[in-house]
Image 1 (cartoon, rainbow, N blue to C red):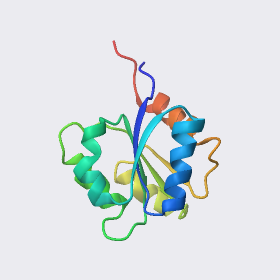
Image 2 (tube, rainbow, N blue to C red):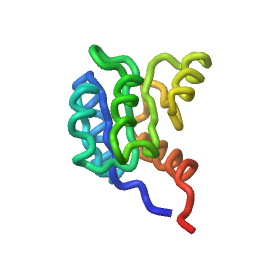
Image 3 (cartoon, rainbow, N blue to C red):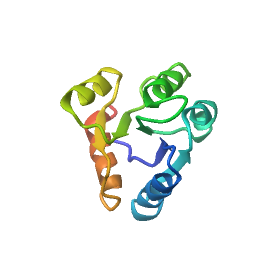
Length: 131
C-alpha cells in the first residue's frame, strides 16, 4: 500500500486554513496545499496531484459539495478519496455528505495534533493494496 503523501485542502477561513497547513505539513509530515475557495481548487488542484482531498463544507460561492463535483469532473479525480470538514455533524448531514462521495467526515473543531493521523486512518481504509 502506498503511503499518504499529498493532500489538497479547501478552507475559506484563513485562520483554519493556516491551522490545517501546520497540522498536516509541520506536525503530520504530509505535503498539503491549501486553497481559499472551491473555484481556485477546481482550477489548480490537479497541479499538485493530490492523493486525498479535504474539503470544508460551508463556503461562500462554491461550497464543498460543488467543489467536489467540479473536481470529480476532471481526469484523475474520480477515485481520489475525499474527507469533508464540517461543524454540522448531525447524522442526516453526515449521511448526505457520504452520499455525495465522502469517504469520511471530520467534525470542526478538530484536533490539529491528530488531523494527519485521522487522514492516514481513512487512507488505510480506502486504499487497497496493489496486487
